[in-house]
Length: 127
Image (cartoon, rainbow, N blue to C red; front, side, top):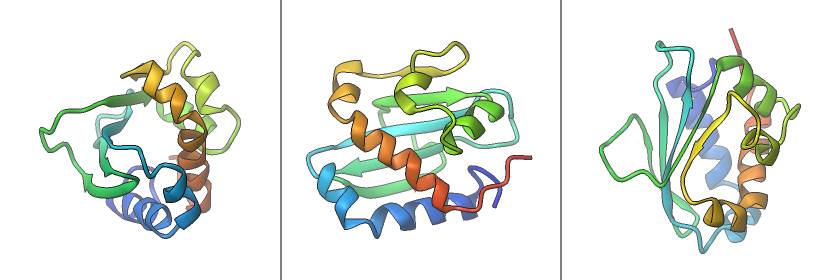
């Protein structure tokens, strides 16, 4: 499945929603975030709204306030999704963008890492 496609996004949400261990780890987390590809206009951003660890919305941008915005090039996402670069390292690497509370992100960095690791369970095409 093409990274960030509708089919890919649904698979990602299914993995998230079916991981009780993961949701338990973020049961106090609420916030809206976006994954974007900075060099591919043909790939729409994926917005995910979370309330107490549960996804309450996912899809295109819906004009709700965004707490975290994460972006990089298509190749950058491939490196992160494939585990070549951790989320923590990516946040400090040129070419990777992050807007949002770094304090809150630090509080949940383990969960953010797990949320990206879950992407590896999806057969993802980066082309």
